Amino acid sequence: MKKITTIIIIALLSSSIAFGQAKSEPKYDVNFKNITMKEFVTFVADFTGINIVYNETDLRGNVSVVSQYPMNAADVIAIFNATLNSNGLSAINEGNYIRVVADKDMVMYND
Image (tube, rainbow, N blue to C red):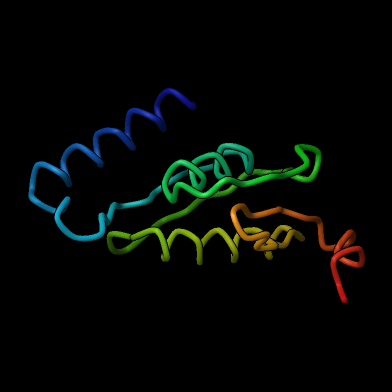
């Protein structure tokens, strides 16, 4: 499944660059069906160039994403946050990276 997902992403990136979209912020169709949360987090890190730290045991379940329009990095981060929240997780901006934390562990991060 990972190999197929990678091939799809590469094909989308190649086709977008070929049509001249590389001059402005790149936008791509982001569509996944039933990928693991870990695969999704890895995709977000690769797509946005942001380092993401997580506890692998917190990344349970699968996710599907269907976009109706091409997405840029900000759009992908918004989907990332919504997906985390719907799975009992939160993203904490630590400056040069994002930390994914289970909501039950957020007490350690609250002021």
